[in-house]
Structure formats: structure tokens, C-alpha cells
Length: 340
Image (tube, rainbow, N blue to C red; front, side):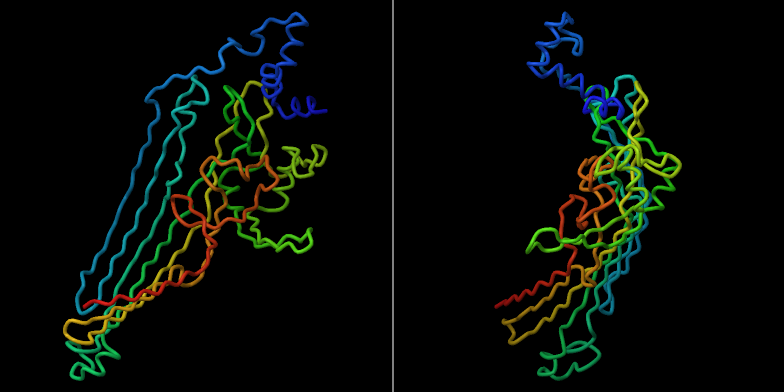
């Protein structure tokens, strides 16, 4: 039954909230002689809020930068950042431990390498090659190539159970038969294409980033995605909801894979007459057409948590720290500018 499953899954608070907030069930409790505040201290108060300045964050980093100023047509810049960005919500899970919610925030990128460069081809007037012919200069002169590359470690996201505990806050999870580093090492991008079940439906590519055995065993522990409690193998790794009464689970953070970005551009400047110039530029965003998969839409998203049917899978591509999604494909932009 629903009640038996809720008790087995250690979610008695869900049952209590149902009885406390449902008018019919609440009336039955009163008719049976139970006191009005059996589940809520003051059932007549729908919400009580305390506004404080309790949230905080910390950022520490080592930053190294190398610059080569523009000389002989070449400019280079490179940097490396090794950082840690931690924070906590202003709404604590429990007042007994205000530091319980401290963890990585959405822009906690531990490693980031960036390099950009620009090279002006030494061709045309004022340069080493073909510098004396204006006709050849208009064809071969004024070319410039540039690019920027970014390689960074993935952002962190919490493995949210979707279960509520104290004060209806996230109850956390428990790692069974494995440690967090072992779980992180299991992350491996595997591209799959689900079968089409509806006539005329276009297949949607999916990425599975955890082993199938771990996904199925976790689904059994949460009793989701067609897996029952009876199929659980307690001797192999899986992620479990907190099943010990009166206790909270752990805040477990997993990290997205490393991301690789390379953008490039080609620029051609041409002087037709002294006061008439053109500038043609072609930009290649993601010039190598690399796809960086996004395993979760945010640091505390429940969209593909251990208690969901999509756990261990994703159909999203990573774009930026603001979590704007893109198809992960190459984008070409052509721009023409005329100055006179």
C-alpha cells in the first residue's frame, strides 16, 4: 500500500503532512479524539518566516597569468585558476547545525585553463611579404586569425533524493558499498539512443553517465522506474535514501565531466580607397563541434536525482555558468562592416 511504501522508504513526514493539511483527514483526526496540534505545533498558522542575514559564501583561488603583448603581429594570453567556492543557504536544514548545508555553489570550478591568441599575417603593405603591390595587398593583405580555448573542470551538483525531512527540507542520501571518490570515478559518458515507441516520433539521443547496475540498484532502493524493493542487491554499490528514523542523509555532490571549448575567427580588412574600407569577419563558436554534456541543470536540481526515472541519464548540453542550454553544435557567424 501507499502507507506501507512510505514507511519503508522512511517518509512518515509525508504521511503526517497529508493528514495535517487535508481538510477531510484532519477532520477525521479530530473526530477520533486526537489533539489539533498532533502534527503541527500551531495548525492555525500557515507560515512563519524569520528573515536573517545568515547565508554566506567563501572563495579562495590561486591565479597564474602569462601575457605576450602584440608584437610582430602576434598576441598571446594564458591563465590558470585553481579555486574553491563554497556557500550555504540562508534557510538551514536544522537549527542544530547551521554548517550542515555548506557545500560547493554552482560556479565552483576547481580548475580552469584559458588561452587566447591573435596573429596578423605578415602579408601586404607595411609587411614582409607582398608589401609593394596594392592590388595584391587587397587580395592577400589584412588577414587576421584569432582563437580562444577554455578547458575547465565540471561544476558540482547535489544528488538530491527528493524526500523531505525536518521542516520539509531535503533529507539527503546515503552511499552504500562505495565512497564518494569511487562514485565520481564511475562517471563515464556513454551515448545511447532510446527506442521510438510512438509512430513518427524522432529518436532523442541520451547520455548515460553511470553504470547500468548502479542505476538499477538505486532505482530499486528508491522503488522507482519499475524497480521494486525485492530486486535490490544490498552487496553491490547503490545510492539509498536515508532509512534510519530521526536521522538526516548526507549532502553528496557529484561533478560534471571536464568541458572543452574552442572558438576561432578569421578577419579580412581591405582598403579600397583612402576613406573606404571593408572588414569581413567569420566567427566559429565551438569550431571543433565538441559536445559538453550537462548532467544536472543546477546545483540542487531534483530533475534527475536518485529518486527519479531519469537518474544517471541526461539529454542536456553544457554552455555556461548561467546554465543556459545549447545543442552543443558548431555556430558560424558572418559579419561584414563597411567604413567610409
